[in-house]
Amino acid sequence: MAKECLICGKSMGIFVNKVAIADGSICMDCWKKSGMESSMDTLISSGQYNSATIKEMITLRERNESLISNFKPTKKVGMLSFNDDTQAFIITKSKKNQDLYYYEQIVDFELLEDGETITKGGLGRAVAGGLLLGGVGAIVGGITGGKKSKGVCNSLQIKITFRNNPRQTEYVSFISSETKKDGFFYRTAYQLAQDTLSALQIAVDKVDNGTATEVPVQQVFSGADEILKYKGLLDAGIITKEEFEAKKTQILNL
Image 1 (cartoon, rainbow, N blue to C red):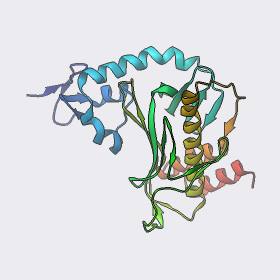
Image 2: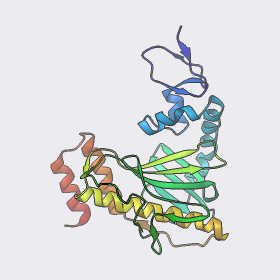
Image 3: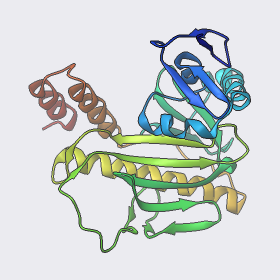
Image 4: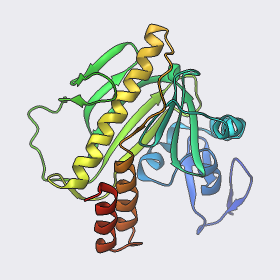
C-alpha cells in the first residue's frame, strides 16, 4: 500500500520522490515548499524535522512573502541581503527560494570545506580560528592547522544555525563540484565566502551591542556573484567552457 505524504496527503508510490523525516515521509514538493532542497546536505538533515515542524516552516514562508517582496537591503553580500534597520536578512538561492531571518536568531555559523570546519563565528563570541578585519573584509586564518591541504575542493559552504525558528540550519553554497584550489574560480568563491562570514559576524555583533546602524546600500563582490552563476551553468552543461571564459572576461573587463 502506497504511503501518504504527512503534509498534503498525496499518495506516494515506489517511484515517487519522497523524503524521510522524523515521524514518517513527505513528498518532495512539500519538502521544497518548506524551503528545503534536494541536496545531500538537506536530505541528510531531514531526520531532525517532523511533520509539525515542516508545516510550521511552510506557514512561516507564506507569511514572510510580503516582507520579502518589500525588503529594502542596506547591504548585499553574495546570496545574502541585510537590512540593519530592521536587523533582518534574506538568503536568496533562487527567485523562488528565499527565506527571511533576523540577526537575533543566529546562533552560530561556520565555513565548511569538503565537510571540515575552516572558521566559526556567532553570537556572543569572536570568530574562532580567524581574525575579523574591519568592515566587510575577510576572516583570515582557520582552525585546520596541521591538516594536509588537498589540491582540489569539492564543496565550500557556510552552515548557519538558528534559534527561535522552525528551520534550524541553512547551507549557503559557493562550490559544489570539483574545483582546483590554484584556480581563479576557487579564489573568487573563497573570497566571497569570507565576505559573507564577515557580514554575518557584523550582524550578530549588532545584536550583542544593541545597535542598528544605518549603512549605505552597497553591492559586495557583484562581479564574483555573476561569475559563480555562470560557473554553475558551466557545471550543469548549459553553456560551454568557451562561453564561460568569454563571460568571465566581460565581467572582469579584461
